[in-house]
Image 1 (cartoon, one colour):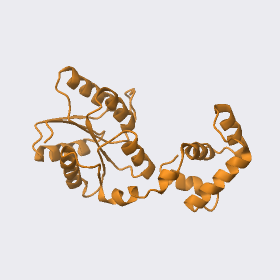
Image 2 (tube, helix red, strand yellow):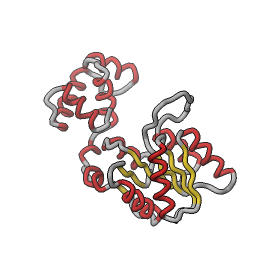
Image 3 (cartoon, helix red, strand yellow):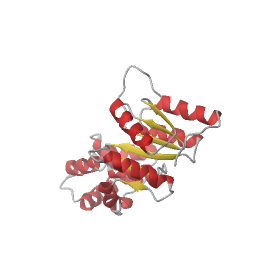
Image 4 (tube, helix red, strand yellow):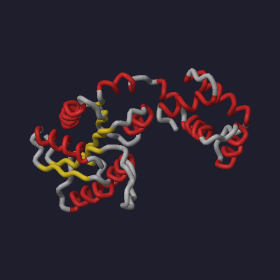
Length: 222
């Protein structure tokens, strides 16, 4: 089993519950942090002391307060930790259920597990920790597993994401065309953009642009 684990959450109740679960797994050294910057410092110290952490368990969302933090989200922390300790195992424990966001964490950041916070999440957390220790495939909460097996979102390209983001800010197709031209994204003609929007509306079964943006936001695309 893992020998040294750090859990990061800004809620004491969550940290306490996770620590209790880790204790039940007989993990000898458990640390916790309420801030991402604090967690990164502890992980750096572990490397300097040649006593690195085996596993990072982190939330994604952290409320801002009086402290000025460089790392303001779980994604920021994961990216920073991966740069200094690429082989550390990472388990996300969050209420966030946006499919696109989770897929990015798995495919781009290489996390080892994702568990949704909920009524029965602590038993799932313990199962996930054991699974990750055994080097099994990415561990997912059951309610996420079938959703992420849906390959349809893989057809959405970076171009589509940028288009949806600009539309979500209230830009017209003509304004999006100018913006794309300025930053060198092609195709940037208004007719090409209109065709792409129509394709996205068909793909997502959206009735209009407003409905399309609402669906994109629900999926975490924008």
